[in-house]
Image 1 (tube, rainbow, N blue to C red):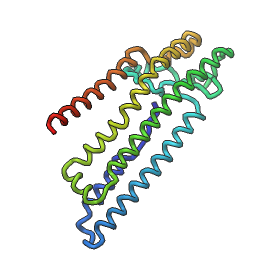
Image 2: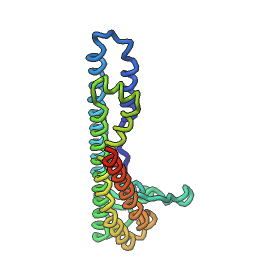
Image 3: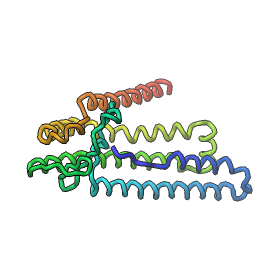
Image 4: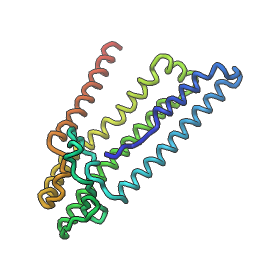
Length: 233
């Protein structure tokens, strides 16, 4: 799916840099001044992230869908020499191969539009999941100066952000995985109907199974960790 660029590493770097610089600030102004800078950096990160993701959503909905950039979890990529030419599906249901429209009838056009709509819907779900995880990560970082100093020094900050992101993403990824079988069936029907689409039908049952297995593994690992914490508590 389209990548949802979020500057979390840069954001964390700003936070930690501010924390490390704290001793150089006069004692009377350290907590309020540095905490204010951290809060401003977090707010700026939120604004930039929301603007980036809004642009990504608009591009998905309004632009051509580039085939090979779908939310498929394809494990294999064709060597560059064997890769098909650039393929796209327009919002109007045209199939473009290397920039040229493939002749299609009304039924094929509707199939192309329906397939594009499914891929876009999944990609939008992915963007929503990324936004929720990023917001949760920022919230996990956005604490007072002294807690940031302590958590950064002990490694708890990084672990807290990682746990928060995983916890937020898991149910969203599961939703996407559950929709992949329908996308696989739509892809099969479209490939049968429009031969020129076949080189771009790269999602296969193994990809669908792998997506579900990865989600189950992650949820199982989280469950084991929670059980161990409960037993030791």
